[in-house]
Each structure stands twice: as C-alpha cells, then as structure tokens.
Length: 112
Image (spheres, rainbow, N blue to C red):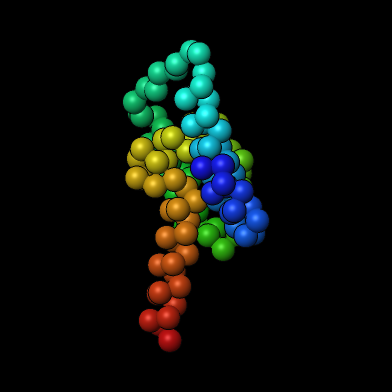
C-alpha cells in the first residue's frame, strides 16, 4: 500500500489520489499494529456528507482536488470521509473521481 502511494506520487497523480492512498496505508498500519482497537460505527449522518463530496467532485472533476478540501466540503475528517465514502459508494473518492473523468471523456468523444 505504501508502495502504491509512493508510485502515485512519483507518477504525478492528482492530490486526492496521493493523499487517499497515503492515508489508507497509514490507517492499515495503525489498525494492524496498534495495541488498542477502535470500533467503527455504522454510517448515518455521513450519507449527507458523502453526497456533498460526490456533488463537489462532479462539479469540479477537472480541478486538482485535495483530500483536505473534500473533507472540508463534507464536514468530516479526511479519515472519516474516506471510510464513509468507500462504505457508501463502494469506491474511495479518488477512484470515484477517476471514473467521473473517464465517463466525461467518453461523453465528449461520442459528442464529436
């Protein structure tokens, strides 16, 4: 996971991708090696936050969006946003953004 984050950084990936992969790697390390385990509660109010994040990504997919910016839009911490987004959408925000870009590219091609 750390290697994947490092490669994304070296390859010049967008901020959201690099930050998401780095935080996911760090979260994995903490969960695996921490003495104290923390419990993860089910999503409720986070669904509205995920919708705000998705809407922002859809409106600004051409921009270099950071995880920090997206978490402020959603009113969640970066960690909490990543967890809630993945649980709700099935993908982390950076993969959702990649899919948005691909679908927009295909739409533009078909319009030509």
